[in-house]
Image (tube, rainbow, N blue to C red; front, side, top):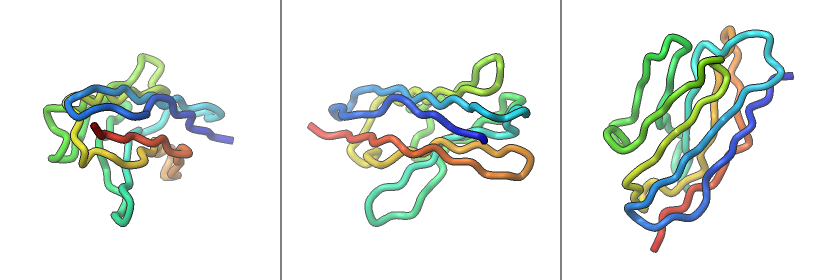
Length: 115
């Protein structure tokens, strides 16, 4: 059974940094795409950043220049480095993996940006 195990998150002041990690387990195949989505209270889930197994990346306009997504050499763990965090980045962040047209999600980790 495929599982996505997330770590990181927490409370940080505006302007601060956090790092999220997500590891894939239980899959015989390397994910085609991995990424992070977020959902704030009362809002729809939105893409934050994604990376393919080939290393191509895609970012939401709101995080470009502040967030960086990376993938390990085994192509099963991704990190999201979040810098210059803003209060509007507050949300539950979900790891996502696409493996042969099947979507998998992590349990979510809370990121709160507040003074």
